[in-house]
Image (cartoon, rainbow, N blue to C red; front, top):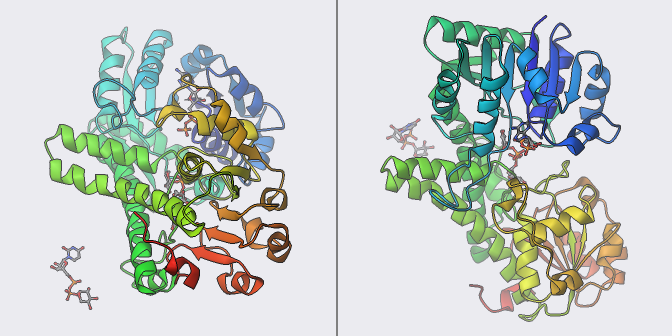
Length: 480
Ligand code: UDX
Ligand code: UDX
Ligand code: ADP
């Protein structure tokens, strides 16, 4: 029986291993983590992450061929294939601060593998890491090898949160990078055999290690670039009277471009896009490619611009001040169908409004009060570092409350901002919300989900990203 061990029971490791266990009954899969609370949650009825369909998959396999454990060393030493899916935060100090990935967790995982291994291993890079990380890991392992042979593979994960199980069941492709040596090819084939249990052969792409590592950064950079492109267009739409939904529909019908990832929004978020682009920028800079670095940096800058543009729109519409006004925030997660808030645009938008002294009432169906408070008190890039938590300042505590539902959040509010496209926000009784709000009542739709015409008929002043502006908004002073 092949034994797989995955180090890191997070958003990537957990769902990926659960699906491997489901699809490969003949393989024993152990997911290990140093976080006791995370492992306890994986072994309970309340899984540590929300992902549609994940519960069922875990229930079917847990205790049979899927195990969650904190006994990292035991499972690593017994495994044939070790996936490494630990966090790779952005460095906040030292060389490459603000851009480079901090490989501390990776390095300690590699050293631990070298310490406890008693047989040959295939080590699979699963978390997104800078190009050439595999080479560094290979060096650590081979210099501490005690005669044991290691093969390093890069097998980046392309799943998106909210659709993780669907993406894992039917991946567009599985990418496996390995050494072009007989040992390397043998390792590639061993991993290919695992995926071949359910993924058609023509969707399994095999490359060299560095192509696999770079393809992951490149794919995320391309996806993020599309969103920043359409978001840049949304600003121009507002200035000209064009409608961004119509523009993206027309553009997306060109099959060379395609319709996906052209939804204008308040900005992209999530643990990957910004981090991976910053990594890419850093790699370019280290290789002396300043122009290329600047090109990709611009994708991040447009994203930051989109978030601050949204805040400016809210403040300028409401007579240039939100001081002391209640503003309802609907949605805090970085997109629908997940409770994940890493790099969510809601953090920057809320911080911007708090900076203008607004009182926020926040509602998200999957995000807890504790998480919201943590996010609003953290510094940039700190979410992936376990410590560094600052308590929320007493004034911020006073300014932020968390509501049980959208109606409670909106009651007595002057404005309502939609920051995540949860389906339930489409189906709200907006007349009821209007009746309970201060007047004039504003809706700022950062995800283009409301029926603008209907809301205007109810009496709202509506701003929707990239849509023709309400006459009210047109009359307001130009934004920075
Ligand atoms: C373009 C648009 O495709 C067409 O829809 C529009 O009506 C007019 O402009 P055209 O300029 O004739 O058409 O050629 P196109 O095939 O789009 O190529 C434009 C340039 O991009 C060429 O220099 C081509 O060599 C280059 N290109 C295209 C690449 O370098 N790589 C590619 O993958 C595709
Ligand atoms: C992304 C990649 O899609 C996935 O392949 C990779 O493995 C990890 O990073 P994820 O971050 O889970 O996945 O979510 P994704 O669906 O890509 O959305 C990222 C952000 O872009 C979200 O904040 C989303 O709301 C935003 N977005 C997406 C838009 O604003 N407009 C769009 O058209 C699409
Ligand atoms: P991702 O989104 O890439 O899955 P997460 O941050 O959700 O990232 O998960 C990474 C997990 O890796 C965390 O639960 C963390 O506790 C775990 N981890 C980090 N270092 C180690 C290590 N040396 N051994 C075991 N687990 C680790």
